[in-house]
Image 1 (spheres, one colour):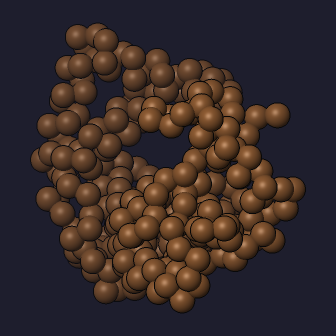
Image 2 (cartoon, helix red, strand yellow):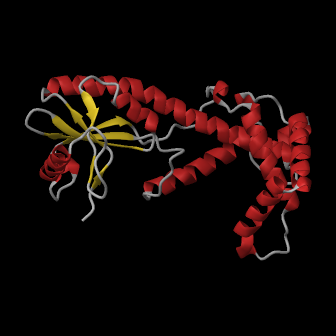
Image 3 (cartoon, one colour):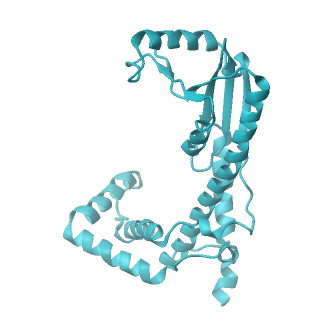
Amino acid sequence: MSTKIGHGFRLHSTDLMEVHFMMEALRKVCRPLAKRGIQAYWMEAMAEEADRRIALPHLSRKESVASLVNRQIREDWQELQHKHRQPHLDWSFEIALIPGKDYLLGLHYTEQSILVEELFKLPKVEAYPYWNNTDGPKGVTRRSWKARGREWDRALGNDTPAAKGFTYQITSPTPLLWREEQDDTLQPSKEHRLRRMTEEVALSRFWDHDRPNDEGIQEMFRIKDWLRDTDEGRSSREAILEEMARILPESYRVADFLVEPAVEEAR
């Protein structure tokens, strides 16, 4: 049977007080990163929706940008609760530690590599993965690799990691609620927004609406190939890009996302 423990590590301490202080230190670093990551995703979603309302005005909206995006994120969060992956929203970080003779074996669980990087900045922590479907990493002898596999087998057995040791919730899986004090400096650059909106506008303008609904994926790739591979397509793409550069603002303020459509139209 194939075994793969790609997220394994080793912590060279069995002093529980020391380990506790290390996990607390990790929390202090990771929690602001998680908050900032969620805020950045929120701001990107807000800016994208605000751009869409300018670039594709035929799409009617009955609620503010913030209201619509919040509703969409709540739906994504519900999907996450049903164990459907949502990497853009899931900044939870959990660590399981399993006692050994001279050190602790650990497993980390998160969608965010930046949080794992902080774990390995801690003193006495080193990567300690194992897999048996291919050879081990360079620098590890075959004998040591097999011994590592036996060590993980003894540590985990047929139980869950939590049943064999203890766990730390480094960052909470609960998403932030929208606040007006969101950091508007976290929104994506105009260059990033232009690339994204140019493609969306091109798909909208050149979509063949006579094609059956079940051929949507093929139609999307047809347009993308045409935009990339033909002179006419590249020229059309460049024209849309220039148009978007003229009409889209350099950036947004948080207050812009709170404006209700009826109020905006009345101005």
